[in-house]
Image (cartoon, rainbow, N blue to C red; front, side):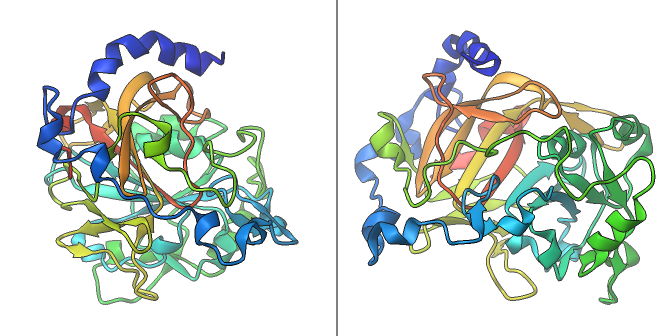
Length: 376
């Protein structure tokens, strides 16, 4: 048994009750969710839906299964480390460019002020294909800790120096700040910075001196896949794996400024992101920001000053959460035991949960508003 699983096992007894509690309720009341296992209709698996059968699931020549999405990508970038891009999520920053092409998107409360406005952090493996991504804003300590588990270079524009400087002194916290393109878009200057084509190559080239910034994975890389993916071409049906699951077609997150919501599209079998009352669509091609996998983590935080700056206690063990895919939710626990170690997600038996291949949305919901999370 791994160290992380031992930690989860010790916490499991206490958290078994939490796994039965519906979001938004302090006492177990499954009827409040208006869901039951019998109501779940899971579509055909990818193998059953494919007219060509399993041949479609052969990895194409010259490709490998991405450690971030579990899907085929070019072997040419197999050892290339990803970037983690801080994206402003204020309404003025919309529409976003390039976020729909991110492999993983974190949404995290950026400040306790302004109705708990959020900021996005986009994990991108194939950054050489970026044409325009952003707009870019400042970072917070939590993002530095989370980017580290991907061995990613954090791309941002500044931040509260009093709270981030010490973290950037760590060798695993490499970053580029304020070194990206400015795009004239008629908005105030703080909304005009983007990662544009060629920017990443220029940034890496400028950092050849000590400390060297490598475009390939460093000693802090976590080997293997970031998540426990199902075999390529197979579909995870949570209702067949677990006794207690819940059909979920809409998730309301307690980020009131953004009104962040995820809505299930039964045709694509993905959750589409909505905010400010509208579906998020990319400025480049109108593509919706959508995800195969959704992870919701309950997490304590500490406010750092009167400006509302904060840090999540994202290095923790046995904390509750939810995994949602294909219109179905399963209660989980999560563990992250070091800045550079992966966040792991476990079921109620202490086994690492298997997830579908594809893009993933991750959010850290503050523990003091966890009961305001809604799922229906």
